[in-house]
Length: 185
Ligand SMILES: CC(C)(COP(=O)(O)OP(=O)(O)OC[C@H]1O[C@@H](n2cnc3c(N)ncnc32)[C@H](O)[C@@H]1OP(=O)(O)O)[C@@H](O)C(=O)NCCC(=O)NCCS
Image (cartoon, rainbow, N blue to C red):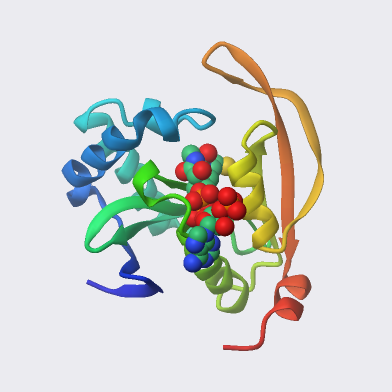
């Protein structure tokens, strides 16, 4: 219903449990690409689990502890951005993103993440936005850099993914840095 234009025919829209079939079809198109470093395709391994995953985010939104939004290109769901955690009282949140391969390489993930981070910082008073990323995930690290985030350090071998322990890089941007890099909207 409500959409934020991202330019070049792309939009950011709500992504809710009633859209599970469309969401599952999208995840299926991007399964290998999206799943190289993140567990979303494993969490949404069939229609029921895809619906449960969306419901978990609807529950988080109702509790104000997380949110997910869909990225659409010419109407087709091609990706998303999310707050995996959101704690307005503490002023902290963790953001993330994904795209199916056909939508990558256009700046959509960065622009979509910028919209939700801007909302978190300006409207919700979030002070610190984290970005946790596999040290091998160069495209996502590049998104963090484009968002103006700084690399804080590495959680060594903290993430067991598909049988392999991965290092996780912690990137973040703080509200004063976010404001300083942008003119008020
Ligand atoms: C992480 C991920 C979303 C990054 O996708 P991406 O397309 O590289 O990132 P963006 O959408 O911001 O696009 C930026 C790229 O588009 C290019 N681009 C082309 N046209 C552009 C435009 N008009 N504006 C901005 N960038 C543009 C940029 O140069 C950049 O390419 P480069 O990094 O090769 O220089 C994607 O790799 C993905 O979904 N991976 C799997 C899931 C995942 O790992 N998610 C992150 C978990 S932490």
